[in-house]
Length: 122
Image 1 (cartoon, rainbow, N blue to C red):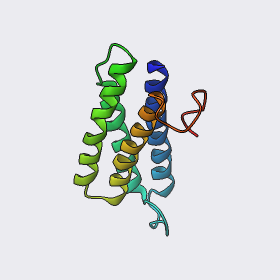
Image 2 (tube, rainbow, N blue to C red):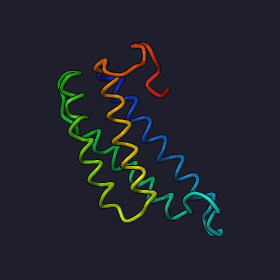
Image 3 (cartoon, helix red, strand yellow):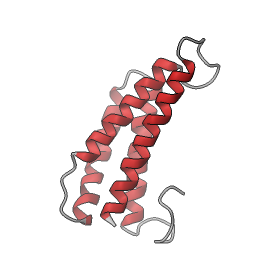
Image 4 (spheres, one colour):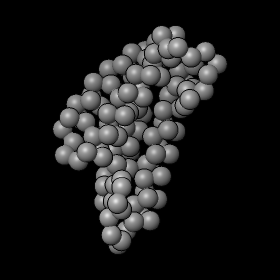
């Protein structure tokens, strides 16, 4: 399962980064949207997603338990990044990532309310 958890998280944040870059391109040179991040904020959010992917790739683990422990220790680091981020949108990326990691770890350890066969994205 450790491969599945890590693969899911890597894919999730890489996809988010790509989506945010597409949004940035869509709003480039245009007036700021009425709701949500503008082009520059979208790029900063994408960069934050890239940093999360790099942090995930840097985790050292030999088995599922070590991976889950490493993900647990990454959560507070992400919360700290959220607290230091000067932009509300970037704060939301880091804070949301910390929450997502906690949810995935809880589910993988059987502490969640969902079935073991549930899609981690639901």
